[in-house]
Length: 480
Ligand code: AMP
Ligand code: ZN
Image (tube, rainbow, N blue to C red):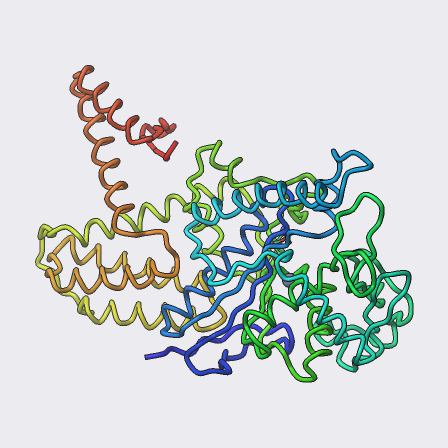
């Protein structure tokens, strides 16, 4: 069975069902990282929401073919990689320096995704491997009268495309056709002709082209890789909201200018992660990396949960309290999982349950999927899980659920973990083991068996667990 999923489409500003061009196979393009530095956790919010999107389609029975590019040539990469190069460095040496920088940060980025349990993309193209495709596209746009050459650079003529501005809803009157901009990033007040191919400046790595030595603009990279790897009709294209303009507007202009028809059906954008009311950004210097969080003892999976428990289209303010709350919610789900894995001990009873456990379970599954299918409403989907947990824990306290009922609940937890990737079998095991060791240490201390208490403490240490004595006398823990 394939469940239909609806998503907010930036193009129409409506929540609409995703109907793939080829039934059962959704093509998904997500703009990848610019690899000149560590990804910050704002970037990672976007990659996490896209992972949830992809996993949700898969769990709903759709095939997904996912392409995420690596932007390994662009203004900032060139600036940082060429800083230490002598002024007479060869083009080869300049390419080598650029490659060394981007290789290093690509590897670190992929490590981050792995620790966040992000499923790898089916295609992970680096822009520099697609230069011939980019050149061919620019030539095509030139042949169609949509591009012009000036001083060895090539620019897109936005006045030539009637739909220019459709995604960002630009006022065509206010556009500055004829004026041109060389930078990759600019704001919507200066919707001008933008650069497709940049003539090489002294000190920059370059490729040969019909217009002389130069390099691609940022926007043409995604158009060329997307067309090459996913074809000329793409179901979903995604990025953070800052990519709506100019990046995605320009991608549409380039691709539809070449194709002469609609390229992408659904444009899906995730909101920002903020710090104290400001966008988290490398340029503002107000960012954390995943490594910064790990140094503070934050489990990447708790970060994953903290992000995913908020709706992707709502601005989210980053806080350490939010992370602690996420850790506690996860412990609750994992402890419940552990309880369902166990045989169960009947409690006091008698108990008149008005809703049988299997009915409760079906209600939770319905509510979960209704929420996910409605634009990935994760807060409501998780609420359905917590309602189930409270209901079944209460029942299990009185009359134990049968093995069959427990297995049905575990199947639902597996199904939902397929998307949230935060309460797999082993994690529940670890949580339960730690909780029971903490209890053993408390009991040993209460009985003044100090050697035993120390032994249990060492055992916890060996598991990488850091204990936190709380003001209320209880003991909290985290993975150190
Ligand atoms: P970049 O590596 O700068 O190309 O960005 C990678 C992705 O992160 C893009 O989809 C951006 O839209 C997204 N992004 C950048 N800053 C933030 C932020 N503060 N919160 C959420 N997403 C962001
Ligand atoms: Zn892109």
